Length: 216
Image (cartoon, rainbow, N blue to C red; front, top):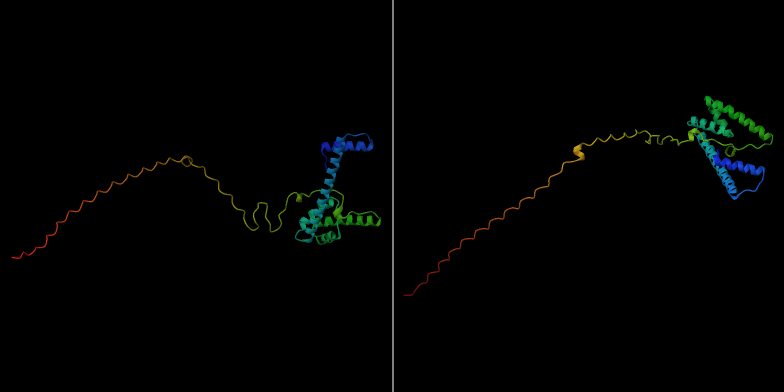
């Protein structure tokens, strides 16, 4: 747990007040209360992180032997943070003893298990793996999300498929494309000349009247 310069100042002031009680100002009391809340929140966050790492370790252990490399790396990290190995961890390491890293971790876990047994026989409390009070550092392998088998790789492409090729660079436009020539307006069509009027039809001659017979 790291403190800022301002938090260290408040912490020193709080320790001085605890050793030599003197009247304090309201601002100093508020600073101490805020620092205490920050420490409590950091402790709760550390407990959540430890519980997550222990649960993640159990998932890796259940998927052995396919996850041997990840399991061994994570076990090494949590052991450095005060994790107490369980009987399942010892059994898993015995099954992987052909791996040099697993053999080293097995010897290390045996020593920790023997110390835990002696502590129980002496009547001392032994912290459980999920509730250890030692700070568990964030493993380097957990600094970023890891893709699971069958998921996506770091390039974002689906498994078994090649990542799409980047689009080709766009060609530089030519001056004619940037400044296209102005288009001439279309000339209006000339109206068609009116059709000549049709010539009037010639009058037809009247028909001859019928001849009348005159009586003599």
